Length: 460
Image (tube, rainbow, N blue to C red; front, side, top):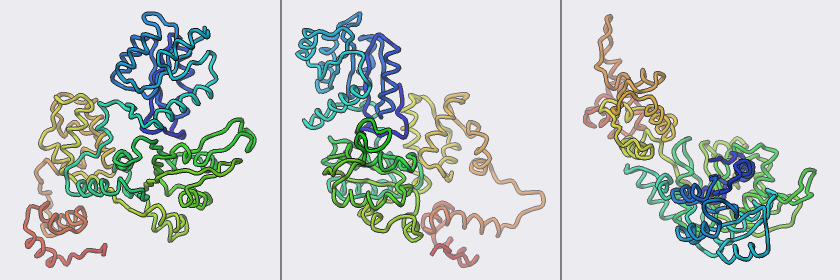
């Protein structure tokens, strides 16, 4: 499978295209062109292979050659329509005739194209097919059903339940949402969940990573341009705001948006109108969800981010909890990832699970997923233990599963107790009840030690 370039636009919910053609060189070149346009590509060299790929992946569009061995395109169209009647199929061929074109269209193909096909024409045809079915309000399967739960936040902790309750409440409004939190906490998952629970669910979800776009390309990426607008503009380019019309635009890492472009984005959001470079104004209907791991209020105070745009984006701010604040969700996440990797026969020792629940997780859920994948690759048995951890972090886990050894020259018990209490308070953000629970003492016992060591919350 080809993956789209990160700097390119994403259509809807990971739109995939299945290319079925006996000419593998054609599949490679065509697949690369479509991947750079933002599609995810599956390729098959025969109708049988194409059907085998179709069933588990359910691509949004199928592009198939007309003349292939094993099974002709008419039978292939019937087989695909039997599985997913709302999937558009584009038939291509190097041996065209009016009779073939008529028969293919009667069989239910969306369009019929003659090789060699300019890549721009094929991309335009794919977009037309997607827009046609979206405008008919047909819910076609654009993602693998087996992967649907990958887009759901996993967790039963109070902080996650409160977050999901807020998501449900705001989903059916059109207010702008600002997702704030550390990297790896699942901001895009929440953005997609808001979209999927909203009345816009059948329209595009367009994700834009503001940190991945070169500054000189921002305007054309967001607003698009018209042919002849500048040297090298040989064709029209549709901007992300126009692609998201009727749906949701997700602006990830919004703090990286150049200051010079912020007024134009603000006007587009306020007026629901855009002006492509070299073109005239167009009306749009877009809901915006933005995300950042930066403190935008500090950026506003420092002059790096416009206050009017900040207030326009942060109508409803949602804070994403870091993984260290919800250790009770870690067993659920581990079970989920083991199922995704088809490793349900793998278990974790009690010592390892305890260590993982006590780890600080600077990379949050993404770091946990990467760690589990690495441990699965290098595991010695199906029982994962501390010894299966990467060397770089094993030492940091050691004190969670080994008994404390008194140094030869002794240690100050009061200094050790002071340090442990301070660690617990900082980890629990000075929630005294939680800190006492993590130290296995009562809240009154903790309060006594706070007075004893003159410990006060320095964050307030």
